Figure 1 (tube, one colour):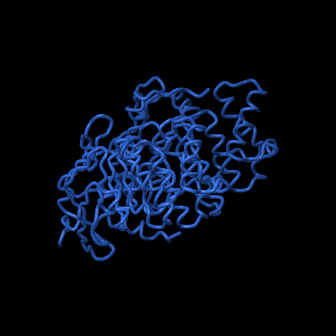
Figure 2: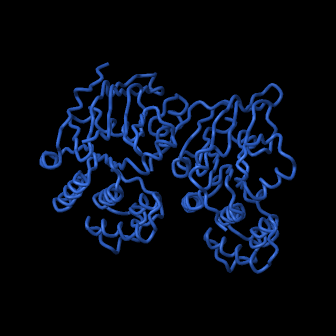
Figure 3: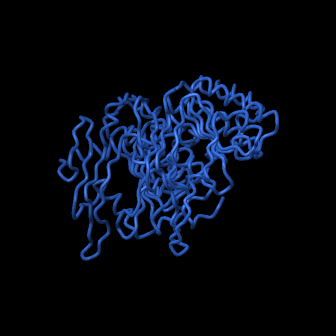
Length: 232
Length: 266
């Protein structure tokens, strides 16, 4: 299978200028590939840099060194060197990201929050909303909530809206940061099914999951990020 | 009325600033600023008062002559032209049609004593519309788009609330379907609840119309919600620039870290 993500020698540290310039090393020498149809789970204790690696793949954190190769529109693009507009293009059509917390715009209805990634890639609004509705239904968000902004929802409901937002597109790469953390057993089951579907459709997935059972069920490979520890 | 913009056109910058600078006597307001803005791209210029961001906006919108460098703009014929070398008619065309300018104080961007409908219709008449019924109908549909009750179309904006005035100013600017809108602290001076509504509205309109925009703001929440890209200014210079969420989530410069850490959590 073709590699969708090729990371080599990626490095990240934070320099805290407000704390006297303290340098916090996060990861160093991050090197791994993810192929189409494969789910790679990042493991390691809290603070080992798992979320930071996901954010580097998404272009949210800048790399100090190394390369983040992303298969985008038929070519390998180094996200560590990409222009802002290239990163935005990658996010529109190639990489989907389910973050730990939903960052929604005030006033926007749940159904539109979920439909938004499809509309951004020129799917007609009606079709986008219909697909959003199907996904919300599957994730057991009652229809009476669809017209409300998700900011008032419970943590678990927000997380499911977030999952729907991340899974609605047919992006070939999907990054999942604790997608099942605040969900009950039935909803965890739905997420496992959704991940399976994406894998069968050929998506390359990088996930962080703390739940051993879920990890066991979705992971094709586990990468322990403590191997990339950037000891100061 | 909506024109189809093709993808090839989007690969060429709409506005290019090259080594732009402005001095007032011995005081430097802006120094050595270069960037390119692409169609549909929203750029936020952030920084505290006195950092030079409003001067920069005025330089970019040809309201102020630069002391150094230049600004070029891609005219509708596809040719990139130096703004300082434009003829008067071309400059007028830009201000009337191709550009919008949203002031922090709506009183500067509106005519406070004439009706809301006339405020919007005036921009259309300036580009040659002369059918009263069509002008009124278009003005009315724009009031609806910015969530102003059309029953208020004949009222003057001086009878409007601050939030309504700002929304009217936006309607007046967008009615000619400009390709580029400059905004100077568009949510400044408004209540927080009014700000949220305005931001959401602007975000939708910018997305639907595929507008490019340059937004000056000291409010990082505005930058996060509206912009794709951020330039952080300090002492007249750009000290950090990048994708908005990169700069706000992973700020590198000491001053940017200070700005980001100064936000109160919601």
